[in-house]
Image 1 (cartoon, one colour):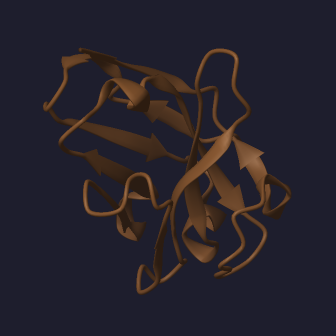
Image 2 (cartoon, helix red, strand yellow; image 1 turned 30 degrees about the vertical axis):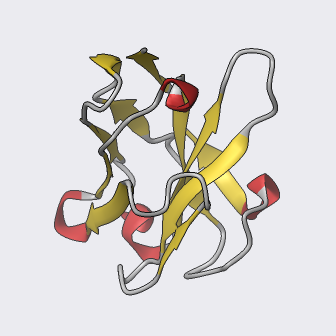
Image 3 (cartoon, rainbow, N blue to C red; image 1 turned 90 degrees about the vertical axis):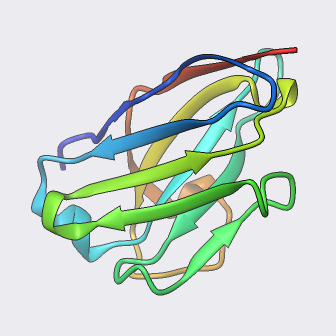
Length: 125
């Protein structure tokens, strides 16, 4: 498996928006659930959102529900994370990952086999 590549991070004021992308060169990307995780300085990595292989099922952490939207375009082997109403506490390195399953409600990182290098999101208060 080739690791996916994240892009779209940056510096944004509180209340602003960003759209992250996760692109994979491996066509198997479209066959599995994919997800977003983040890690803030000094904190453990945490689940953010995930979307099933077909795009029908979406899962969100309570902290981002209603503000973030995960989507995917399987024709482009790409997943997106639209982040609105950003808060300072959203500041973190965001990682995308490919699951070992078509869909799963598990938020455990061990469910994900292939990880990107991450993209920094900084929200200024």
